[in-house]
Length: 402
Image: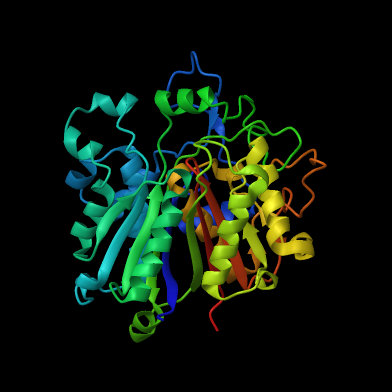
């Protein structure tokens, strides 16, 4: 079976408009939360979000023509900026590379054609197309392999990456551009998650998202886009590409339990991690870092902790476990890709990002959540969890290349 490696990364987040900026600010403990500016706050219980600054538009303009950008929403442009960066980072010559063997898969829940986007009533049909992002990427670079979007809630981009792995292993593709985008902050998104009692109502940006702590009260909405370039090791080596690490394993599974609540005691979460490790042919003892789904909700953080203990046993207490959602918010469809990048960089640098805003510990949650400050830690293998509404679970396993 073909080995799948990572050769390019790109990111747009509330703490950085490129992957290097995102990573440096992540390990520095920077917080991307602020009082919401995109929409009026009257009638909303949640008033804090991790919004992406408009300066990201300059990054998108480096790779895309103005006419193309004008036909998209802000959300889609975040994805385009991350795609352009990742493809440039991988160093592929798109003029000579066989575009028939390149796929494009993105996790897209919604293009966010709402609120202030409605003030620009041009290209409405295009802006509402959920598949606009993968289509534009394939058109721009001449990639004529499979191009489509996946919608599995907060696991969407993790599913996209897992599917890309399968496409390369099967021989259908030699390269897959995979990632996802988050909804932008809109009235419907904020009011909808408030109706579900899923988002924090803490008005203080510095304490609103507190994964794994005693007083956590929900997640904070985060904006962004993330892209990784997957490639067969054979293809990457043939063109002399930089290889970050191997995507050694991946799982995609459903809990068949509840639309919004995880399976009791994290049974489904544990199964997702076991399946991914089995797919990688690795034992739990080989994992050095866990990038948790870590939403800062009562049930997720408790059940994910239980699931980690179930899978890793006593080893769980030796593994750093952190949630980057405390810094960049819950980026929904982009989360799997942006959190995968955190794992990739942890392997490359030997630093694991912190869970910021960690104050009062929860007595039931007693793992090393990397509180507030990044930790130096040699990482040869890392896993990233993404658990979405509807019981859509995915786990990705990254491993240092030999």
